[in-house]
Image 1 (cartoon, rainbow, N blue to C red):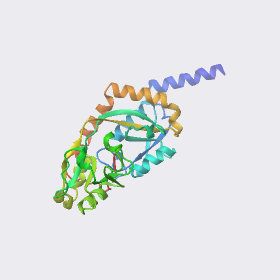
Image 2: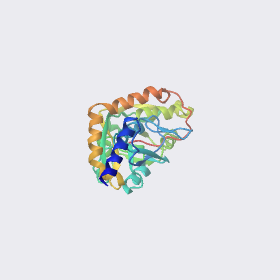
Image 3: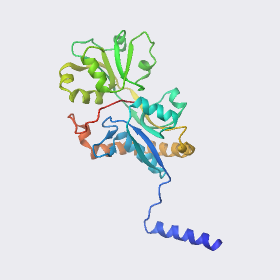
Length: 272
């Protein structure tokens, strides 16, 4: 038995010396929707994006791999994460309710939120200008604290499944404004000539620091490794490896940062 143990150890050392990689310890399922450039479901079946790149970087640090869902709306992804039907998500903001069912690992600090209006709609320059308005948002999405925690009678928040649907309602006058990340709002406008002619960014946006996280379900089988995830994520964030991973993705896929329509045809649907 002793001799066999040393033989196994010798073989493992020999394989390592010859450059053989250690098999992955397991595969986490990441819930994704199509939301360039954060998450992109390409026509060839490949899944890429900023959120995907940083999540892959984190799990690979622990010798895990990733698999992906199909195009699932953000709100449903969040519910599946809560129920443990998926293991992990990227592009998540921090709230007390989310910390009840997920471990959060910081990777990014800044997100700009923009209010979009019809060209002949209300003028929005400050938060107080939102009073009484019908504002479209993506279901399950968090934006910034003053908006998320506003009294229910300050404005009417209308939750929808996709930005396309929200901007469609805004274009028809069924909403007064739409709130989303600035880059994604402009992209949806540019993809539809009716929106381009009728919808504009308001004067009001929120661009203070907004921390963005990777979320690991507490019901995931991989949650038992949470201390390892926390340590690895802290190192990757502190050493700016997460930031470099995003920069590398931008260099590899510049087409998703151009102000043009991409060849991906799947509908946008979220964020944060």
